[in-house]
Image 1 (tube, rainbow, N blue to C red):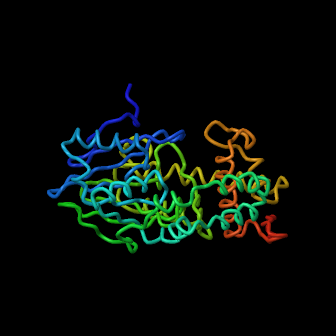
Image 2 (cartoon, one colour):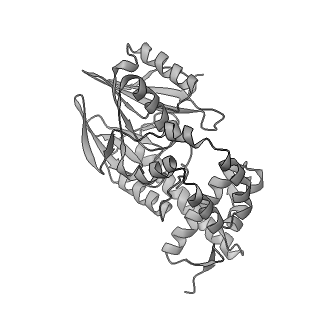
Image 3 (tube, rainbow, N blue to C red):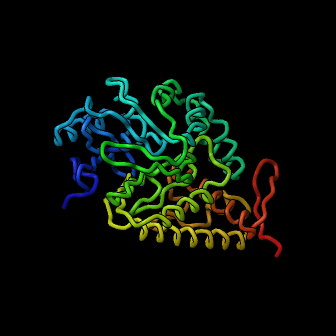
Amino acid sequence: MAGWGDAGAYEVAPGVHRIPLPLPNDGLHAVNVYAIATSDGLVLIDSGWALAEAKDQLETSLAQIGHGFEDITRFLITHSHRDHYTLAVEVRRLFGTRIAIGVGEQANFDAMIDGDVESQFTDMIRWGAIELAEKLRPVFAKTDHDAIKRAYERPDEWIPGAQEIVVGGRVLQAIPTPGHTRGHLVFADPAAGLLFSGDHVLPHITPSIGFEPARAELPLGDYLDSLRLVRAMPEMRLLPAHGPVSDSVHTRVDELLVHHDNRLAATLDVVRGGATTAWDAAHKLLWTSRGRRFEELDTFNRTLAVGETAAHLDVLVARGELSSSIVDGVAEYLLSEQ
């Protein structure tokens, strides 16, 4: 039976094809790029990761629908993570294709291009993850910052918040949905009943929250607000960046809201049990759908786990259920005195 990440170009609506592209050593397996046909060529929503195999697969899949790289007139990018943005930069170098992304991602581009990783170390120290920060420091020291600058050349256009974008005979609505990243956008096609959701709403997994060099102050709060915003829109088909197309955005948004309600309750419970930092709390929570212990995660996923724990703790503070204070650079959390 074919999987959603199998190579090809799959028509998901008239004039719209889903093109899965490979990811390297990644549990997500693949990323979906969506090609929208217009009288002038193609507009692609997201681009894939700038890997030789992804570039070759995109070229092969476009050929299946009678097109090539030269027919792409524009990339509309949902957010700045490399599996969504960096292949667009390579195509632009060859064909001059225009790239557009939400203006909320400017701070992330500035941090990546300037090589600013200190904020990420500061975050980990604030979370109490000093051991993890020290483990990652030599990794960051070996990072090829020139390669990052090349991969993250700035876009041709910053999409300035909510607006309509004409794509051939369609009118897409670009809608800011911060949370996964601070400048994440979804693109809605209300007339066709389609939502190109990027990583904001995924059918099988919950997206990471605030994993970015310029982390927002309350990323989970932003994400929950963004989920409610999308839930208030008319029902549409879900066209996600990872996973298969499904018929109901609302159903999945409801599941994600319940998940985070449960996660907030579990996080509050571990503070009741004595955890005082994000690092402590992350060790006492279970991770992934398999209920894995923190110690079973690799370094990358431990980083995600601690950051997401901090995001939940900060929402509990914002709700008045916890209080926090900074002690020697580390955020400590206590039950609020009610």
